[in-house]
Image (cartoon, rainbow, N blue to C red; front, side):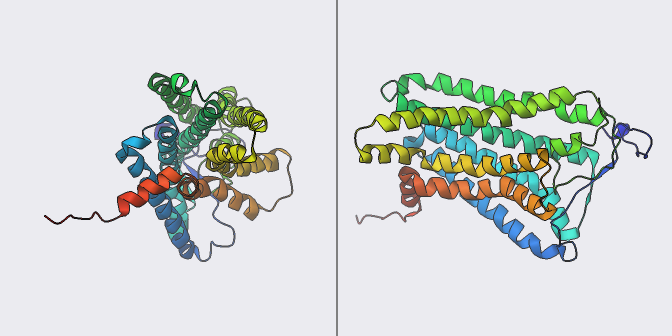
Length: 322
């Protein structure tokens, strides 16, 4: 890919710049190393929490059910997303390194968006699972069979890998007319694409890939919760509604945690709101770094079965006397 990279000039376009410049957390460029500590802490806690979820679901046969399988995939996407972000974040924190090569930037962009779309797809699959469990409880085991789950996994894999694989190659060959300065501490597709010259090839495909996931998924999740809400209203007692609602509490919290910062960032960008850049940068950190940290806590607290199985596994085994 590097053979296509040349320096750009103000009056000429080029296929790709040899480097992109990242933006660090404003105000911390003079003392970059100290904020590496919270970054590493957040990453290690995320890895530990999601690792515990992966571990307990893999080991416990009683958790080999659709809801927990989707939770397993969610934890995988959280680990992958936080890991994909760390190289540039730690480079800025430890060495104040703002320059990143185009090939490395496109590689990070690919993995960040693959795991982001994977998380969005899994959240949608979990919404479908909850809607079927609450709206069609008698037919749930026959509707969400192992074969159906396998097809959902294939669809998620195609959506993440098949649709996103062409993007780095399209962006590598698009002409660029603007200064190669990004607005985040990591490489994101909209950030790179906006630097391209108007009318560059692949723009329509890039827009389709982004909207097909991040635009469609929240609407389908909202529709699923609309169906769930209608069923809950028809339940006889408040206790029944509470019990049914509790099964969705962790998932709904994860959905809000993932999508609300993303929607706010999109609105700020589209409506040209006069929001300070530090606030936008912090909001992007919340969108990418907080879900992998909070999701394991949410599911451990809200899902009694996960909590009990982890507690049981961590208890020392009693050795009986002969």
